[in-house]
Image (cartoon, rainbow over all chains, first blue to last red; front, side, top):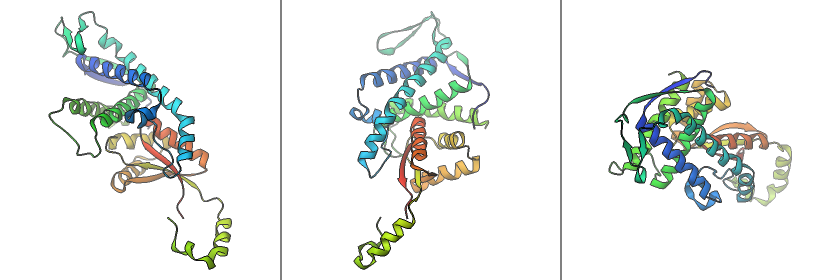
Length: 173
Length: 101
């Protein structure tokens, strides 16, 4: 169902900052990876299209990899751009190692972001792609792979929660 | 994948005829299960990209989930490659193959 209307998303400033940070890291990962095959997490974004024909798979990847990866970058950029009103705040400073210093004490404030149809699609693809990368880093091989003690799983679950919410908003559920 | 008759030499001639008579066995786009993509997202992708009804998109998603994969399209190879690239663009894992006999 093509979204034909604007989706209004509510999230906290903290979430917005965190998400923008993840998108930047994702972009840096793509920047620093010369060939997708060098990194299993990036390789997952350009999977083999031919199971039993390595030559055809290689040829297919040679033709599609550039487009697929540049789309990941433009999606990440679109998400960051739409988050800008929520994260451009003179009271918010990013400290060492991404620790957030909130001078105004409003990190838990809810901000409202309107996403036009194209931007919603960029969000959906970007959230799905980052989850694939995280899952690869976390070694998730089955749906039951989960470590409650590992905060990275918390991030993974949160991205899934946000993705699911957006899908529902788009589908009109 | 080969059927047992393939190994019988005396059937070679018939087999050749058989292949020649079905030159356009279609190609397929197959979507595979993965532990990451959300069921709701996969349904959304099938509806949005292929224009499937909600019911058909859900049926295919469940087939992917429970059987490990599902054929989502059939036709010429070039078209199946476009579909596979589109699925990859959404983050789904898709492959292209010749329809099994």
